[in-house]
Length: 451
Ligand SMILES: Nc1nc2c(ncn2[C@@H]2O[C@H](COP(=O)(O)OP(=O)(O)OP(=O)(O)O)[C@@H](O)[C@H]2O)c(=O)[nH]1
Ligand SMILES: [Mg+2]
Image (cartoon, rainbow, N blue to C red):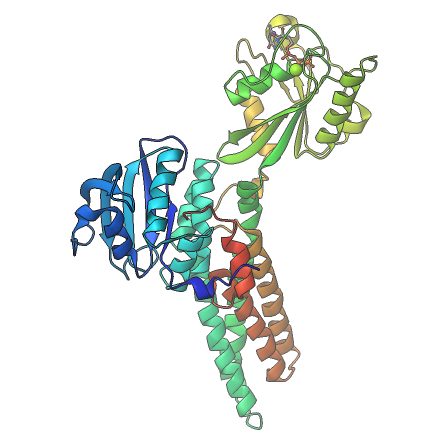
């Protein structure tokens, strides 16, 4: 079994903080009480007591004193560092092999390799960040679109936490008022106390419900919607796939049955990450078993998709399996080849040509509307983007509703107190005040090493 993270908190840890891939500069980060000692062994040019927060240039050496790289080093004494511990950083040359060698030098000098998310976990434990903020770091580095990045930044800046803390503070006051009722059970404290309980409970519930409702948008930011391109062979699915992705990703050819297995790629649809999937053309008959396997996959993928494009050149209807799909969009393709159709009335959704670009903006708008429900497009940046936070908010809403109902039914204050405490605990899970060790372990182990 892995040792608990708690017992390791006093170690000095090191990791490659930049990407280990090829890059001009690579960063190694060290954190812990022995950071300076470890740094001085690898970067002797730092001297006995380097000036804090100041970059110095020199050569890095391994345990035998051989030069292994050169670059900048900096020493950042705690507690006003990212982790709250003493921290050191070196900026050497980038590249996996070079950085691995530098890292080995730090290990030989006495630092242990950090576990996933261990820097962020330390920042959390040392009170530099709350849990929602620490989680936002992982979201920030993994953000698939700028809009998702924006939300991660807002959470990192504490926007979500501020609301959660404000509601927790209000509920803590409510709990105090309820406990007074418990203590003075024989006296009739009357309306004054009701005002200190019911009104703030209702206000808290409204705020929690509003915050919870942002999950509709946050979820779409986190879990890419799936859009599947279907249609008869040669309809132009792969051509549209390439145009939407803005690169030649799929093979396009005038030969029907070009695409067989499906292809998928990530697309930024008005700030929302989506997965676009190109599939094999659907036709009634084929004696090619590979093609029919491809067609089966196409149908399966389309059935479970958030949106399905049915592309066709001649008004062919979608197969029965798809025609009731709620996210179906019927697209008449290759309009430039059939100018006569352009003015004809038609009950499909959009007509396009990838050659002239006609209809493509309308198609993008339609896709956006189909994938992102109207109610979830607006809103500030205090958005719930985590399943975990959503579950806690949900439970907190239930608990506060129960407390309100208990008060209305004049149930004993002890029962109201139980509900309010439950809500407080649930909200505490979001900011990390009531989170257990195994939950912390699970959260931080999904981080990258070096974060
Ligand atoms: N003129 C014109 N040709 C198009 C257009 N879209 C596709 N084509 C052509 O139609 C042919 C078939 O295009 P693909 O994109 O390969 O069609 P597909 O639906 O992926 O076909 P399969 O993979 O075989 O199912 C190619 O020769 C394309 O160049 C269009 O908008 N205008
Ligand atoms: Mg194709």
